[in-house]
Length: 158
Image (cartoon, rainbow, N blue to C red; front, side):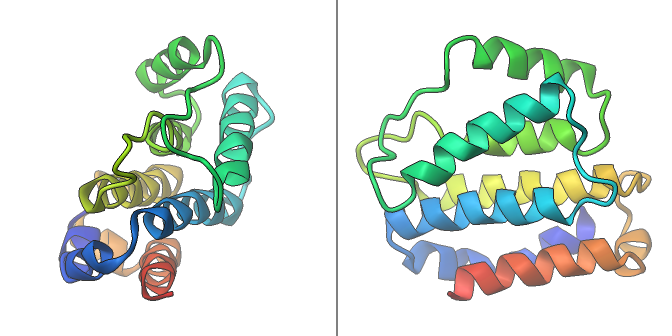
């Protein structure tokens, strides 16, 4: 995660300049892009299905009323179990990222909130690539890590 911390620190001011609705749209698109970049893809397991269902709800809220949107019934408990089990490579951080697209306050998605979602997306890549805690050398030599950071910066820049 060292590479992400280093590369994305400069993006904080850009994130702060985005409108809350733009931040939400970037968050959802980053999760979607991260998930679709996985090879092999996110499995069609219970965790994968929950992730897809919640992402679909978040995706449909982009450009609409995403404020205060609640997770589907039972999803929070399922997400907690997925995160604590951490069985499927890269899925737990994506679950945490998508969970952050729900329960947004009246003021909209804050800059730090989006920064957290982007961090979870990158953690999902590191986990999916099975890198050892994502050391700087490992990340610099991993195309998926580099692509993930480039994609996030592109989304922020619009």
